[in-house]
Image (spheres, rainbow, N blue to C red):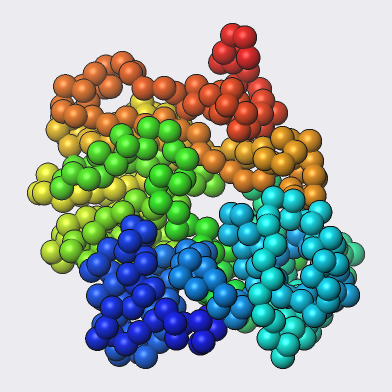
Length: 507
């Protein structure tokens, strides 16, 4: 949570123009109408303005911290930074509290010599300047206990695993039982990494606790189950989606970590080539726009970034998802539930009676849903949906396989974006492996994509006829190699050895 003294300088009563709000508007991070509705909510809930803006998805936690640093950096000392980059023992020995960081500066407080701490921490933050701020001495012990608890607290094994996974930047946790022990894996940058081994007695306690938190039937171990819960982490709430699968040695448990800070970048920040072509399509008042790619290709992040660029206050936006992964304020989100007859088609029919402007479908899976999506687009609505295809032409073929006719799409298709994710080289070591990337050589992920906007039905027909006037995804991938953002080994991991057949001459 934000320090009350900090927010006292940045938040104000709803009747005034708060310094924080004005700064966010000037930065272009929020619109004036977003500030007004947040102030109206503040008048009812009496919460701090920054907390409301983060929860509503108008800004990220990182943006809020950056705003406070810009407005009154000396009052950032109420924050706390948790990172796996620094050994806990070093912070304990130096009695140091990490406060916050931005692109250039690490803010910290210490009870030791500043020169000593600067020397000790310099290898872990080679790209940061150090700025020491006043340290609230009553907080240092609690901070160090929490840090140590992330690694050693056996009393709450579930929380320890989850917090460790979040600190490591994992998207999923896999808990896999074996005959004599169990394994825990974290999926980091799309790759599973072994985290730890444990005894089966611990596994039974762990899975029972997870199923209880996720509101599953603890006694049922023969059938797959789905559930979820929330957990507070560094001032924000993270949604956790849990799935269990019966295995020969016990239940496999997979936890998807839905961290809102990971899906709130703008479309520009995602790194999608030709993203303006996609923006042209989704800026229109009607028509059909498609985001395509396999599972784990970043479609949800792109979809959420697209929604955040829409006018969520002035336009009625409805989503049908299976399930809703990231909650967005002022968006009408519905969980698909086939068990009670609530499928995509039924949700779409309900949306059509609820005065929509934009309709978002988690996936077009069958002819009935596809025809309803076309009907919605025909009647003046913008429909954005996802498909599991590998190319733009593949999206068209997929819709034909479902049962749509060309004439049903020719006048309504506006834009198609196809993407996958590849790991990017660590900027500090350029793939060699260093402390910053934990020896992996990679320090992030970026989309590789192909995107086309169709200005009229003639361009759609050209695409139907097999023409292509946009760079392919593989061409985009090799352009990232040429730019030094990723390497050939990563392309082979993502696309397979056949990617080498499209390797440009001279690369």
